[in-house]
Each structure stands twice: as structure tokens, then as C-alpha cells.
Length: 442
Image (cartoon, rainbow, N blue to C red; front, side, top):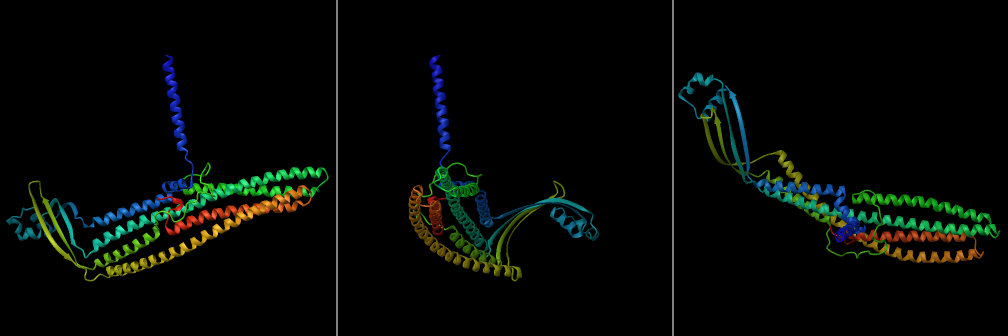
């Protein structure tokens, strides 16, 4: 009995450990890569874009099916005393007799009823290339929409990078504001003690309290920025405001730019759209070319179940719109759309080259600002240390110490901005060159 109880306890412990392990695995670190992938799968905007891809795919499949034969089934019931229809119905029912040729019967027939149906198969044989062009245009438009969706994913990834590291910038600023407030509290204690000893003026303490109030107001503003940034990140990733720590540090782990395969979806889409427009122009021109088709059918018409007529037919025919103003106008419009698509493709290529040049300069400038910011912060911190030491010895006024603290805050802000710009500008360069942003592939 004791062994059995111990075995149950061991199993319970094992189950608890497995549950705890599963929980730990479920709470994966929220890295920037995970944020990008979550946005690709959960964001409603990208889901709408995927629906557009599915729509284009269905349209393309419809264009491919234009070559298939068309089967039409019809059923009818009729009752009439119109002379020609009455005679034709009897003829189709295969029950014409001598009496039906009586002029009185022909001119004034009795009402006659019938029911029947038909099945017709139509197969296009030659359409002037219209069907082939439409099929190719549909395929190109589907592929263009796919490429556009990939571009939308990269644009979303770039926005996630900005929101992700923008959140970190705001949170680091909040930490530094808290550090400043703690430093002010220490200075207030020191200056307050000196005031009580008569070694400093009361105005010095009041100046510190005013500086403290400014820091409190700054903290409230930064808290608002943090909450807004986390809410924006949640919007991009398809969830509510993001909670918990962000695992990818702002100042390290920046992947090298221009790694992996290059793919600019907007350029690919523009090229495919130009090709689709060209095929569309061919399809519109095909409407003015003769077309040849095959039609095979069978029909039946009943007076009763036993009195009926059956027939079949097969025909090959040609149809040619020798003149059609609407079709000529459509062909002209399609040619204009083709020229527009070609010009847009050229513009997109020129725009991409411009974006690459600008993005490269932005990366260089961001790196330079970061180097300058680090030097500025080191100088500001050293100046603050010296002035604070001189103030404690009574050799420097408080205003110099506060100016030094303001300089440190400014240098810290410059550090954060430059780090943020490095991250965003490198994402922008990846975006411009068509490389995976933050090394994340769709």
C-alpha cells in the first residue's frame, strides 16, 4: 500500500513538472523576430491582403477554365394556340398527321401543350488568342498580388521594428527619469541639511524642488509615451497592448544589412502588372477577330410520356464582329492601360534606386550620430561629477550642477535617438534593397 501511494505521488510530481515545463515553453521571449512573425500571422490588415491574394487566385483559375466546354441544360413547359408554334410543337413531338395540313387547322389550331428539355455543349475552337491572353493576364495578376502581399509583410515588419524599439526607447527614458528623480532626492537631502546648518541659502533648496517638479512632469509624459508605444505595437501584432519585457536589446544584436536573398515585392508586382496589362490588351484586341466554335446538342419535346420527339444536332460556326464601337474603345483603353503599367514599372524602379541611396546615407548618418552621442554623454557625465564635487565643497553654485544634470539628460536622449535611428535606418535599408528585415524571412 505504501509503495502504491509513493508511485502516485511520483506521477503527480512528474505531471506537475511537465505542466510547468510546458508553461515555460509557452512564455517565449518576445523578441523583435517573434513580433514580426506574429504580425504576419495575426494582423487583420495582412489577413485582408491574403484574402485579396485568394481572390486573385480564384479569378486566375476562372480564366484558365475558359478553354473548357460549356454544358447548358434547359427545361420548358408551354401551352399555346399561336399557329406557327402549334405546328412546330406537333412536329417536334413527332405526331404530325394529314389532318394537321387542313387550312382550317393550320390557321386556327386548338391550344396545344408540351413539355421537354435540351442539353447543349459548346466548345470554343478559335478565339483569336483572347482566351490565352486572358488566362495569362489572370496568372500575372495573381502573381502580382502575391508579390504585393510579400511587400505588405515587409512594410509591416518595418513598422514593427519602429514600434518595438520605440517602446524600448520610451522605457529606457523612463528608467533614466527615475534615476534623475532619485538623484534629486539625494541632492535635496544634502542641500536641506546645509540650509539647516546655515551653510546654504533657502533659495537653493527651492530651486531643487522646482527641478524635482519638472522631473515628475517629465515622468508622467514618458509614462504616457510608454503606454502609447505598447498599444501601437499590439495593434501591429494583431493583439491588445503588449505586456511583459521586450527581449531584443536596442543597443546590440543588430543583424548585418544586406544578408539573405533580395526580393522587392513592389518591383516584382509592377513588372507582373505590366505583363498582365499587355495580355489584357491582346485579349481586348481578340474581341475584334473572328472566332470559331463547336456546338453539340440534344432535345426532346413531349405531348405525353409515349408521344414525344427527340432530336440531336452538331454545328461548327464562325462569328465575327466586323464593327463594334464599344469593343474598339475597350481595345484602345487596354492599350493605354498597358502603357500606363509600363511607365509605372519604370517609375517604381527609379523610386527604388532613390530609396536605396537615401537609406544608405541614413545608416551612415545614424552611425555617426551614435559615435558623437557616446562622446557627448561621457563628457557630460564627467562634467556633472566634477561640478557636483565642487558644489559639495562649496566651490560651485547649485545652478552649475543642475545645468550639468540637464546636459547629461540631453546626452542620454541623444544616445537613445541615435540607437533608435540606427535600428530603424538599417530596417529601412533592408526594406529598400529587398532584404529580410531583422533577418526574418516571410
